[in-house]
Image 1: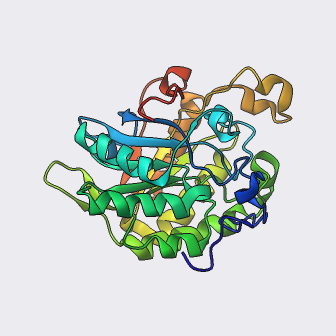
Image 2 (image 1 turned 90 degrees about the vertical axis):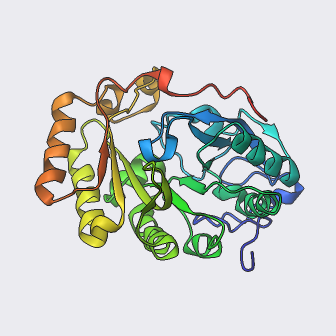
Length: 303
């Protein structure tokens, strides 16, 4: 990947320039060695991603955001996971496909993107046939997305904020709205309009996720409006109510609203807004999804 370098690192919008090859930690809190916390069939994604057997989810350690409410904070901070080589990662992809995975689901891979891309190429040369899903925070460099052309089939991307102040306060990324908007444009350009197979499984396309935060309906509506007015039916929205307030938030968060779950009324209000706006292609969640049981164990299964 020309122009992109892991040491000094410029792979993400932070461009922290950490010398990760010498053991230095980037803003993502990991060095250059690929670290995987779990590789297993995962049935809790959108229906067109999980299907019947599950998505072949590979959870990578580290993250370039600092979301105070992070649902996967154990791996985001690089505290869980096992180091793997590029060739071993390729083998993991093939093992997941053999188990019946609907796709290979790369969860937060951007800080290892050069090695991960190589692993996909190696796996495809050895027969990998299922789609590759890039499951990310939305805080991605355009150059990374551009150079993943031909490697990634589906982008499953967050769009967390249209409010720069909120992005700065909750994720230490005040440039998030601008970065995510530019990245999303590259994603849509790269894979085009959604394509599904006979079973309704996505083979190509973009799904934009938004996790509703308690007390922040205005931000959610701004995200929905932007995505819908910009891309219409060429992307799918996934509107999520599964925000889980962990006990640690009581001590570390100034925004007290984040210490509670999203109410049914809040979520229904946001869904009604989306419907009135004309959104047709969307996934929604039903019931009480704000449970820690929906978060997998990062026990290095399959690694």
